Image (cartoon, rainbow, N blue to C red; front, side, top):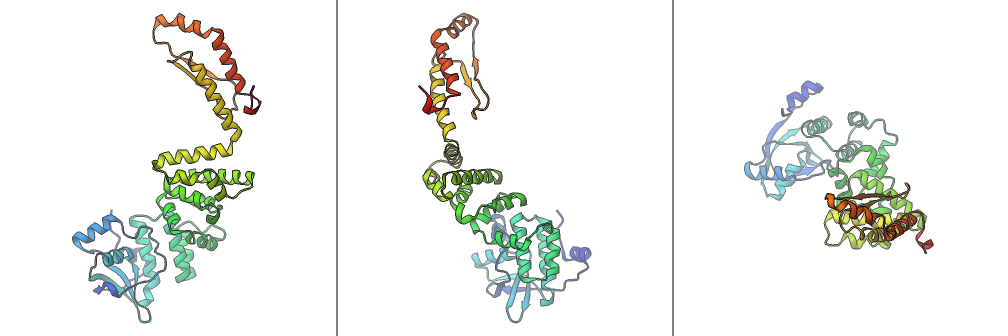
Length: 342
């Protein structure tokens, strides 16, 4: 991929950026932002590159008399240089009046070279609103296709107020805007344990929304909070067990399903017990299936016959009275509540 240069930026925008390159002490560089818009502050590839050959791409800074030498682009390089105890870094020094253009160029460069996740775009816009002109804010909102959102500034505030671990999760999952808007309907203070579980078992955003909706429905029906439901189901024990992430995922969904459909779960347990008896007539080769939601009537029997000599024996067994009685019992269980069973 072609590397973006200052000349490219001038050709695209008509803004001529003037700067000088100096080797500056790392301890003199000051962060120009409260919130880094890059979610990964120190990727391993960048760390390895700096360890092997040093910092090749200069950090972009602005010298402001009242505040010092402010880093505008290159926060990850500065962060790694501090960790690796590098004494100085190559820096492009710009005059203060070019700060806004420099920031826009940095955003343009990052999006051009590697792209920005939704959470990173949100953090860019939030920083722009806090530190730069309304014109630049509107320009980036259009660029990121956020301009159509109603209450955009409130949406940005809600997103950057999320816990760091949750923002990182949304970043890693590359969540889409509509998905994020749906998740924000579930306050972190009320659904914190369920959201932390999503990070632990790596639920996809669509899975997370489904779980949150089910939790809300069950909690409302049982007149309890989502956190109370979490503890009642023993979900904390599941999450902190030695099981794999996939196993925890299945267990959490299973206990939630049981809480959501208690009658259906009891009926399924009774059915499985009766079907187990039915299979004893054919220890090998009988499969019994039914609609797990119990919306479709009846069952399906699939009998495996491996040899011609087995045909008469197996068909005779199908006609035995005990088998037919058990088959009728299974069918009755499909339409009988567990507490009504004889």
